[in-house]
Length: 252
Image (cartoon, helix red, strand yellow):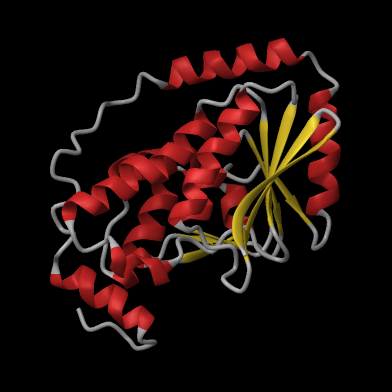
């Protein structure tokens, strides 16, 4: 089963990323569900949200098995990133309810992007972060890159994208992206404890603080994405996806 689950426990909501057998990789349908879930949270009485992955991993990226159906035409590729993906990420960014990320295992690509939308990130010492899409022959979409650059920092995003590096949680903690680095197995309970602490505080103040932080951050430079997906039908893009699906080394 692949879905974004929403469950409430008192004043705290739990959003769970689930794609069984695929390390919780995001499908197109899941991106749309993510948007609907956070739009619901925005208009709820919940005071904090915990975002987590089902089982041992947060999210391993996008579900690459779906990619051949839409990634090789500019129009459909643009729709995927600008409507499906950004729709989900924007709903998280626009949510005034504090969001805590409980990160274990793999946090790759889409997982990193969703983590960037959270206010506080807790990670297991064994968690791994990256966006090794250079191996798949395509770049990160402009808005998504800006999001990761602002949250994780320029040095981290350059290393992840240009070298396809997978970085340990300790490195992201040192860079300030992960606020709390925890021993194995302690992330779920610590995230719950933190969420309950936030929920006991003034909810109006939290929402107003998030709105002000969003307005301050809105001063970022606007991006010209008019030709951002012109590479959809490129040979490198096609080769990268096909090689992954065929379980072979790409020849770029």
